[in-house]
Image (cartoon, rainbow, N blue to C red; front, side, top):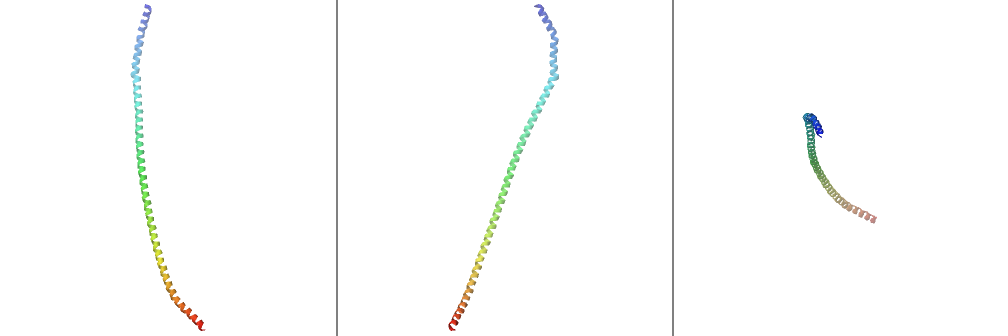
Length: 149
């Protein structure tokens, strides 16, 4: 058994330089390879997270501008509708005024025509009365001449 322990001790003694070399290799790789790699990965992560953050900020700004645009569009449409309604009311008022004026002129024309017809009727009555008297005298004369003959 002592031989086994001696052999084991020899193996361990021979393994010490390998173990030290592996530890040295570990620290060397950690300092030369893994730390710069970790630094690059961290910077990359920061860059992608920053890009995402900037993209989210840009999206939020775009949404805000879209809301402002929609609000401005809504306000302009409302103003246009108000102007159209005012123009329509003015047009209707103008039409109503024209209709009232035409109605007034038509009433005046009807009244003037009635007066003219009344005047013509009165003149015709007077002419008929004057002619009826003359006709009556002529008829009477004709009848009287017819009896005398």
